[in-house]
Length: 338
Image (cartoon, rainbow, N blue to C red; front, side):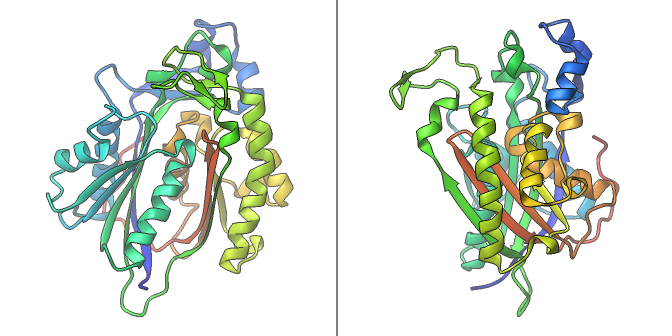
């Protein structure tokens, strides 16, 4: 086995802002109600002709510019998304072509909803640490605005669009493995609580609403996440042989601030050391964790050498956690403004 590390990060969000005040004109809601219940103040919305692959490519370009990285030696592209441009071909294959990544690179999409980025990181670590691959491009991206029901005030206030990308590379000879511990899990018995209809009309015997838009039972997802995530975090730490006091930053999926608060409370972890991207970008699904990590880096909070615990959770119901020590290369240029 060889070591693996995250060497660079980039992010992108669309230009258009959808504020809480904008939503007041669309559905029966108001800014105070949204902030009190979610912590979200605005979100970004992709153009009609702007798709997940476009966000992915922009995030990678930001990463390349900031860290002086090339993708000409990338040998695998992994994209975590629930909103691909097409059922097929994959977003990863479109990104490979758009960025001129070699034809010898593999390219696949992963579907694990809001846990997707952590699952993709776990997969990248396996590919690199096994010796099969040298340099894996991992992207979490979604354009949830394209599948959001803007007549449903319980869901339309939550979701936005964005993308985050990292490079996972082999560590030098004899170097440590920066992927310190992980935990994965799923509970398909709750699949009916978050879904978008496809070919089947039922899941777990439950008749689905055939709108083609995102449907969520927020109460059930909330209860599941607040119960499951703290247990999963403890398992990550156990597998890593680490203590939560050693974790510099906790980065859960930015679903809702009112979910993050009780999760931190149950973990006895300071909320001020939890990073999230929801206030300015809403729930961006697979993009929310890399966006939060990159915001921390952009603000000078998160630095190389620190330990970050990432935990994604969402539709499936699926979840994934990863404790990582950051070994980012020095930045050579300013990041693209968000």
